[in-house]
Amino acid sequence: MYGLGDVRFFDRIAPLYDLVMPPANGTALSAGFDRAERPIDRLLDVGGGSGRASAALTGPDVTVVDVSSGMLRRARNARGLSAVAGDAGRLPFRDGSVDAVMVVDAFHHLPDREAALREAGRVVAPGGVLVVREFDPTHPLGRLLVAGEHAIGMGSRFSTPDALADDMERAGFDSAVVDRGFGYTVAGVRADR
Image (cartoon, helix red, strand yellow):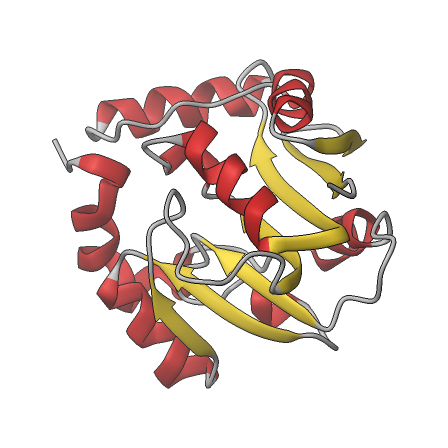
């Protein structure tokens, strides 16, 4: 109904998004970033929309990357964040140019998740980290979320924590499930290549 990556939906709800979404879990994200083997000075918030997750962090230079122009306007105007239009499967950044990538509550919307993991592996410098915060479709609340998103026409595809950790391993990350529950976190360190 909404098309690839549910972009039209997010363009429409951008003005209201921050009013209905709870703040991101900065503690869970920090636990993922703690796995990095290098300082995190430059971070990409991929699928970062309005910058809700970026707002939960202090320290690194953050750039929000999203395909929704409405959400990027919110990141720039409401939060003063650096924001770049871009596809998670073709990130507009040089190889090894960032210390970390995070994808918060958005991985299930990405049309090509394998490409997104490969791209994260390309842009993250060795010793850097990819942190993905997602929803577990096997959790009771996760089952409701899956049903709700599908009912309104989203093309969402959810992964369990262990399946996502395996996918990150195949993309070249040393991954671990950092926490579990309705919302879970998987972090993967990019190995030297």
